[in-house]
Image: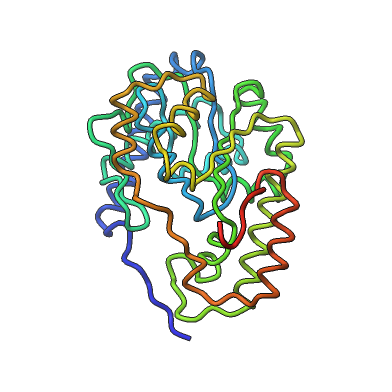
Length: 291
């Protein structure tokens, strides 16, 4: 079995530049923008599964004039370290700006949204982090992180964006190794991908059961009608959705969702087994092999 590796997201110089930008901008933000932080109404974080379309939706939110969303910053890592709210917010501001400064490229896609507010905000109302799979798995290993985050930013301010995508596609992509794409995928790899996916689904269910505000967004629905879905998402975050903003975000949406499952042969018995498990989650209802 051979492995194909996709192109790197950043060159070595871009990675060095990113690191230096993050360090510098974090310190500048901490020194100059603390007064803004108390007025922020919502802390937004992503939960769910890798390969579910988080980056597209996260980039669109970061383009809003009242939102700063750090790309893949992994804020819960700094919550675990005991950092202050202001230091974490300063990091998020720095990550948002740096992601755009170095090109807005991720997983061989460009997420720059022309004419909008990525990396900046006119009036900061929502701040957050796009690290769905990583955040979910940290919470799965240590549910106490939810209490730590609540104590830091205020439980009433937390809103979680949960992006769903056809589980067969997510499992298939994970079975293929993500960026390290396997030429051949067998039942073993598919089962491993499924177990990882359902562990995350169980964590999402636990978070919902604890009463946190979770906003479900269907990847497929977003691709089919980004304007309607983005307006709904903005409303759930207490944001207006200016028409020029909505149109600019819709312009970067690909024509149709990629059906990764069609590129791998799944055993019929495994399909049936996975479908039965999918049907056990209210927030995954309606997803089938053929949907």
